[in-house]
Image (cartoon, rainbow, N blue to C red; front, side, top):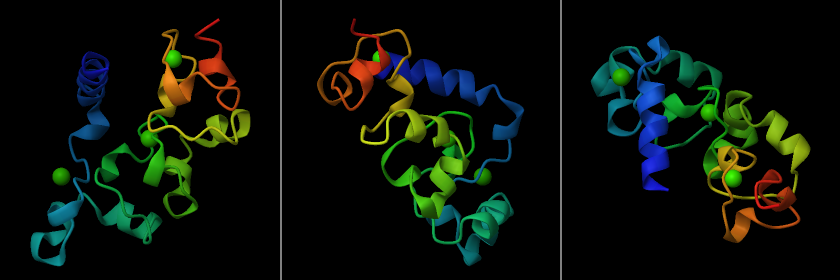
Length: 120
Ligand SMILES: [Ca+2]
Ligand SMILES: [Ca+2]
Ligand SMILES: [Ca+2]
């Protein structure tokens, strides 16, 4: 799992949209100029969205938990397909559903389509 996430963050960091990413937390304060301006769009679009890594919102990958909420625009729209397909599936990493690898536990349940068919 750790390897998988490292690989993901590597592929994400090569995306140009991550050069000026909103880091959130202590960066996203008035004292820090809202992360030097990086967080202004995020704060405008999702004023009530509180997540540890705002740059994950709208990065094309569905993140669960606090990201997949109405306040956060269902991860900036990234989770809309997932929510439509698996409305009762609550996992931390929805992107693992249907990624071709069988994930056990909460992923391999009827609600999550048996990991989106990965565990067939
Ligand atoms: Ca930043
Ligand atoms: Ca996302
Ligand atoms: Ca999977």
